[in-house]
Length: 471
Image (cartoon, rainbow, N blue to C red):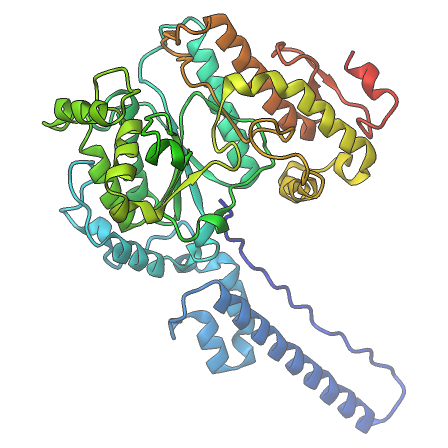
């Protein structure tokens, strides 16, 4: 999340040069000119402050605010107003909660998934109006969510793997300025397994009215392109984004036509209503068994009898398209989440392709601070136009999802061995970690060797010593 920056404007007084020569009239003229220049400078400062302040606050400006008082009272109050803008006035800071009543003061407010939330758009809008420090960038603000079980993993290396998946998400959020919440408890005890995320999403929407988007990412999904950002402009007419293929839902009626392990949901009333409808197919519902039967009767390739969130989402798209479909975007143009088995084997080839570009483009291999990484991500896009997206592409996959591996329980899909899962996870996490460690001057030589790193020589990979450093 891009946090709004505090605007600080430093006025420096203009020091006029006075000479000992010249008469009284010259001194008076010089003093007069100095005051005119000072007054002019103050006027410009007021105008700049007012324009900047207006762009970061709601249209209704409190007449009692220091900026308004300064404009009404004259230049003598400008310094006080500027200091107030710089954060000395707690009423407009991000940590200040005004005493006026908000939806949080309603004793009927419930964070639970069972209770309906009404008029959320109006309540959230009112909260933002009372907290103008969050106005800037509100439309693109993201809160990422993930979680795992409260107890230790049964798989001996499960907790280690979950820790590394956690680190991966924290790295991505830090680079792009997103907030992050990791949950380890069942907020609705009867909503277990894949249904457990829904109560977390609702609670997060209420806890973070400043966030426009809630981004759920399963614990076994890793970001493997640290530069790529979600194309939010592409989703401006939608409230829900999920990886999927419409023809598999509407024509083939396949429950695998989408994957509900990663989704982006707008923080709005539509989402509250949609999530309530979706959650009603879960195990806390008295109709849970019935929903399992309905899902299997429609989606013939669903092999297990229980109602699950993914098939439930496919059902709503198929059977209630007129009600929900227009606001749901099925992303299939890039790896919003990608199946690990078709991705992991390509990491080394992808690394070679990127290195080849870096050798030719000095700007891309320039050392830089981590805080400015996003600007280099934009530079990369100029050189990836022919890389393609998805299967067959040599672009870094955005998210590699280890569906079926079950790192915590170890109860992986029997189509592949557990060792293949664990090795692939290490490779994916180290592939992503290399993109992070580059900013710190190091890199993993081997994607299957998590513990060992080497320092990178200056001007890597164009430097003649670069290849030797990675041998």
